[in-house]
Every structure is written in C-alpha cells, then in structure tokens.
Image (cartoon, rainbow, N blue to C red; front, side, top):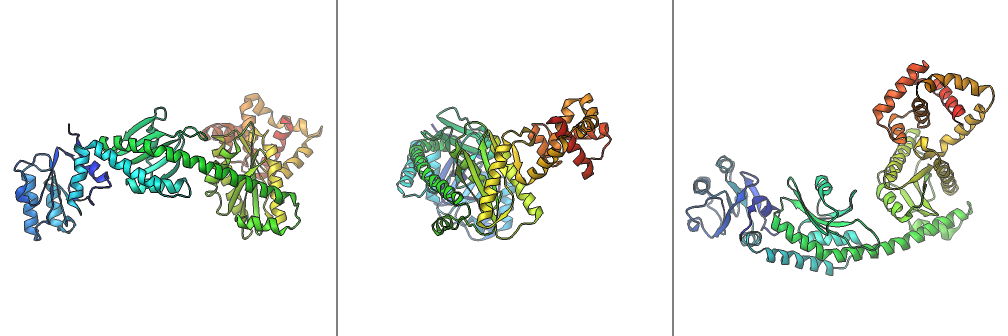
Length: 503
C-alpha cells in the first residue's frame, strides 16, 4: 500500500538528489512519481504526479515555457529537471501562475530512490537510517556533542538531547520550541507533529540521569520518515546513554580535581605557591585582575553536580571569563576582569547573577551570596570568602529572594544597630502605622521592595507576585504614608523603620 507523498517530505529527505524549489507552490500532495529520460515518454494523464526527467531540459526560453505549459495542462503538479535553476524569470512566473512546482534536481536517480523509499519501500528507508546510525557509532568521539554531530551528519536530520524543561544539546539544526513542548515524555517512543515541525524521540535509558530523550527532528517530515527515524533513534539510544555515562565519570573526575584545586588555593590564605598557580593557569583560572565571586548553596539537600551543570551551562550569559566548581555542599564561582569594571558594569553583572539565581531556583532550592569586587590572588580569596558568608545569610532571607550581596550587608548591619534603641522604635511604629492598619501585605511588600534596591521586578520575584501587583501596592504605600519613594532620604528612613519594627 502506497503512502501519501508530500513535496515537503521529499525536500526534507537528505538523500533527495539535491532537490530544491525554483518556482511554484512550496508544498503539495503528490499521488505518485514518474521518472523518464525525456518528456515524450511521460504519460498523457499526469493528474497529481511529480515528473522527473533524467536528461537536461531544452535550452531556449520559449521551449522551457512550452514544457511547463504542457505538463500543467496534463495535470502534473510538479516537474523536476536538471539545470532548472537556469530557467528565466518569465518561465518561473509561468510555472507559479499555472500552479506547477518547478524543481531543480542535481541527481535525478537519487531523487527517484528517495521517492521509492517514501512511497513503497518503508523497510528500506528504515534500514538506510539504521545503517547510517551504525556507521556513526563506529567513529571515535571525544564527548557527547561529537557523537550527536556524527549522528546528525550521517542521518541528515537534526538531533537533540532533551528533558521536559529544555534542549540540553543539539546538532544539525534547532528543535522548534513548540515541537519540544508537544513531545510526550511518558512513552518509550513518541512521534510529534506541530504545524510543519516534526520529531521522533525515544527515552534514554541512562542509569545516571533520568527524564532524558533523544529526538531526530526536521521540518515537513512524512509519517514514513518519522517512523523510520524512530527506529533509528532506538538504535542510537544505547550509544548515547553509554556516552552520557562516560562523560559523567569524566566530569565527576574533573570536578573533583577542580574542587580540590580551589580548596588548595583557599588553604594558602594568600601565601604564594608556584605549583597551585601553575595548576590554576592550566585550568584557565587567572588570579590576576579583578574578581567578583559568588556562592550557591542548598537550603535543603542538593545534588551539587546537577547544580554545577546548570550553572556552567548558563555562566556564559553572565560573563566571558567565568568559572565555577563544587565546593563543600554548594557551588563556588567567580568572574575575572582584566580592568576594574565601572559601577554600572558591576551592577550589570550583579543583575545577571541574580537572573542566574532565579533560574536555578526553578530547579533547585538554593540561596546565593555575592562577594565584593577584589583585586589579585588575595582579592579572589577574599571575594570567595565574602560570597560564602553572604550565602549563609541568604539562606534565611526570603524577603530578598534568598539572594544577598555582601556590599549591601555592611550598611544594613549598621542601620540595624542604629534602629535598636528605645527612641527610634516607637517613631518607626508610628510612621508605619497606616500600613499596618490597612494591610500587613503592604508592610511586607514595602520591606521587600527596599531590600531589593527599589526594583519592581526583583521584588515581584522575591515575593512570588506579579509586577503589576507590586507596583499597585507601592503606589498605595506612597498614598498612605504621604512620602515620595523617589527621594533617597525617604527610602532610607522607611528602610530603617521597616528593619526596626520587623526585628
């Protein structure tokens, strides 16, 4: 029994003989395919057919126009010939007007074989994909990305390693987010079609990481192609799972080495050591320049290796020279700058770290601390120590979204000392009384707003609220208290008052 054949499926086939559209409809359903050497050998009734000519077409424009018109008059939906790229503008416009798709094909017989695979020889198509997968697996690879690139190149379609949240690795293209969202992670095999996007995926049977799938994907793939690719994915899966395990062992070993190196560096307490300096340089860790450290720790039990994968995958969006490794029950990392950043640049990096923290909190129950900008080897050690202190404080700071930067702690602790006296506390309670009389939510929102440096978005994230809700509440606070929140002195007074009444 023949399958339906769509032009898009032929175009998506990597072994289509160099098929490409020159003019006319970009996709159409084809009832069958006829392959002949010359036009005279084609059937008189071409209703719904794709005609493939194995000899070059006529060279003059009027002869090419006549060829197009005759095929359209006889009901053909598409015509594939060599050198169709050389057809003139008028001939192309004629093909489009007559609703005939004109195609250029470099190797007509390869196109004929692709049509045969899709229409009748489904087992041969599957065998072809499986053979290509087997050949890819035989190649020596250094890591999982190399294996995926080999698989994609051999099979001719994109491939991705995914979980339910994101695309972890991909090669040969980009998996459409709508297709990724539609993939069913429950069954062993899944075939997904969303609009023109398609994917055939299989669950990865990995002892070290759960919830993974590998997916072959592409635009316009037909059902026979997807079924064949699903089998190919099953054949490729054990090699992918094995490579994941090999890379996991290598990553664990590398992480152990980097974690030990960081511990050795910190144990020196600023004392120069050539061996440690050499090992750090070999890893790309420079102790010269200016350093901004951060530390992420779990508020509950934490898989530090999984957290490290997330952090290293996203560090590139924070800073170019950024490093991280496991340290104790968390992750320690830092950014290195060759020159002292401007205050604005520092704030930009702090904001990026905050976004990294927010992203990590979607997957892990963590708190993050950020040290201050310091110079040289001793500065790196000092910033790492400050980040560790800030992280320990952040564990209990829900109002700041479990994110604390050490630069804000000195003033905060000083302000708390000022407000712990019998004179200030009654004044603070009187100042904030309108908020307590109206709603406790207003006081907690104001406190979080000031803790988060008067930023609506950060406050909304810390409190789990919509930005509009925070904006409305802050506006209500201004109305009840009769203060201008744009005034730094007013904000300082309110911050002091909030600290006093909430301590």
